Length: 365
Ligand SMILES: Cc1ncc(COP(=O)(O)O)c(C=O)c1O
Image 1 (tube, protein in one colour):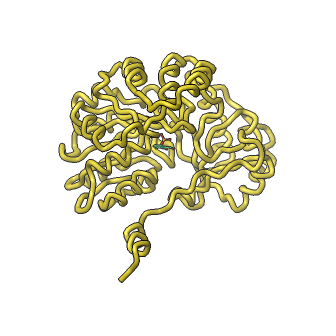
Image 2: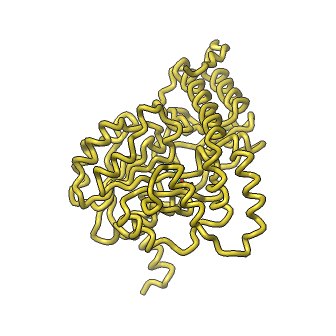
């Protein structure tokens, strides 16, 4: 009979281990492999974090932070659930809605944690190939028949492509009511305004929708592990029952409370990212390097890192290999500080540009 470890290994045989983005070979600013916020949190959040450090002997109390976030989002507190990174929400969803004999629908390639949480629960995964980097919503809606959860990051990771809100609304209307649609808006802040769905309306019309958000990207709190979900009251209650007590720590709660007032800081930070994203996309277009039109804080391009990786590393930069993300032959480039992005573009020009020496730059309109 197989021992305890062998038995577990058999059960997890199809669960890929998560490998985080590699650190930069030089200063951290060159780490363009994990879609982090280059600017960091606002001064007000930093001050609040320092002040909160004196009370970490107490268990966290999420009351004030939850109320502050709900007010900021214009949602009733009963429709908001705070989680330890938005990834925790994936595991809560899998625990509550999936399990042996159930099925989950994902795009292919998908955000890895969605598949991992589904498989760990014992559910099967129905993978629907992307079309031009975006979700094939017609095919996904068909796959949702008989499934319990549809995982839908928009903008998607690893491509950055966003669903149009009208198509999304049409999709959700087609999905059977007994299938939960998890709309993961990790990168919402970086998308064009017309590509950000009206969440209030969507939740009101469709009780089988859960909106997943993270504070790791535009809020720049990846290291504190904070995310949240928005859904109907009964759905939030169910998810809360599965959540471990105190899963969101005191420092994260302090950062939320202070962060709701840091909208201007975030807007400035997002604007910088969008500007650098546009510059990178211009460079890729000029060099005729295939890439997905990104609405996120990264751009995924067809780049052979065997050739490029060492040249980038020489400039202190590391990007994410598409091979880790289900896109072999591609690379996902997180948008960083302007100087690192300039190094990245000049590396591209010098290796591929064949005479194109001018960096076009671009100011976003
Ligand atoms: C689509 C998507 N969802 C969720 C997350 C996880 O965010 P968090 O740091 O809140 O766990 C990420 C992180 O990169 C992501 O790309």
